Structures are given as structure tokens and as C-alpha cells.
Image (cartoon, rainbow, N blue to C red; front, top):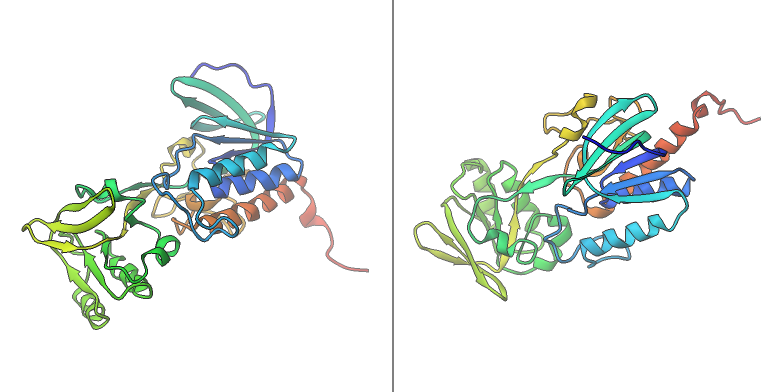
Length: 316
């Protein structure tokens, strides 16, 4: 990759401009750190019209929340934002070297410390019509959108072993639930009996299409032609971390390919930290991710100051 030599060594480079990355960047720049925020503005929840559960911002558009966060961050001296994507992070003589590219435009940055906050990518079940209603009639975050589906006839669609757990959680918002496995054998007979005792039915047929129109989803058509009326519901996607840009550093990953961190966001690589959905347990509410980002920022600032752990805690 060809690019001009960097002019600045940043104190911190934050990779990812979601709630975790923005919160970390804001707190670090307020600690008078020189912070580079790198983000392509392609969040996994971009299809969602409204985000919920974020104090003072309940019902805000995810993209608007990010825009406001960037504006707050850029209002401070030492803040910089690049609209690009990190292709690789390698170790260099002055810190980490970040090579970036977006639409064939390349750039490079050097930072003493890096926070990985790129979150997750999600893949929906291969069901015709589902993508068209995702973010409006169908959602993935129960904690975020369960309230808005209250007392409605909804479906719980998925091909993963946690489908029964998700259905049980949703029962506090609706007593008209239908679990759809799309032909996958993911609900054990014992779990099905428990769901049935709560009035929750399980349908194991393959879904042919999610039906609906401009007003939203109206039903689920199965492969035998039967249509069950549903105004929407929740889908369980597959999630992937896509942390290939960090591969040159060899950071430890868990079984889900997420970064392994300690209680303060430190990875196995010195000066490399992680926050938000890039770490376990995975998908998180926006406000939770923002809180973690702030906590990791506090750790980084203390680590950059240095020597704090050597001071006596004794009070004379």
C-alpha cells in the first residue's frame, strides 16, 4: 500500500465509531489526549430506524446518534476523524501502524495505543422478504425493541440453539408468540414442552417468504403454502467479528472469534485495547457499549500516565 509518511503520532487511535468507540474517543480527548477516530459509518444496525434504551436519546436514529457523537468529539482540541476503513494494524518503531483504504483512497496513521471497537457484522437467515422488513417489522435486539412489539402477534425466527431462550424472554411483552426454526433442528423436545406450557408454539417448517407491503409485515408463508398472520417479530442473525485487520498482531481470540480482554479492556497485545461488541459476550445495547467504551478510556488514560500502580495507597 502506497501512502505518504504520517506527520503525527497519535496518543490513541480508535477504530470504530459506534457508541463504544465514540464514548472512548470523547473521554480520551477530554483527558487531553490526541485521538484519531477511524470509522466508515457502516454500522450493523443501519437498517434500524429507531434505537431505544439510550438515556435522553430514546427513539433516536442510530445514524443520528453517531453523528451527534462525532460532533461532540470533534469539538475538542486534539480530536480528528477519518472516514475510512482500517485494512491492517502492525507494530512499528513509534507505535502501531494503521493502513487504511476506502474507495481506493489510502492513508496511514501511527498511534501509541489502539482501541478496537469495530463491533459485529450480522447475517440474516436466507428467507425471502425478511431483509425488506428488517429494522421496521422485524428486529434482532429484544431489549431494544421488545416494548414496541407489546401485545402483538409476533414471530421468533432463527436457526440457533438459543431460540427457545429468546422466545421465553419475549413472553413478557406478548402472549401471542410463534417460534419458527425454518427447518433447523434447534429446539429440543424438552424445551418445546416448556414453551408449550407457556402457550408458545413451535413451527419447524421451512419458511418460503415473509409477506407484507408498505404498511409492514403481515404474515409468514411456509413452504407448504400455509400463511400464518404475524405483524413482525424478532430474528436471530449470525454474527461475525471480522477482525482480520488485527491478524498481524496475533491478539488472542475466544471461541466466537472475539477479542479476549481483561476486566479493563486490555487484550493480550500490550497497548491494544478493545471495547463494545468486538469482545465477549457479543451483541450489546447501545448504552451498554457506550459505558464500556468510557471505562476502557479511563484505563487507557491511566496506563498512558504510567506509574499509578507504583504509588502508595496509604493515607497519612
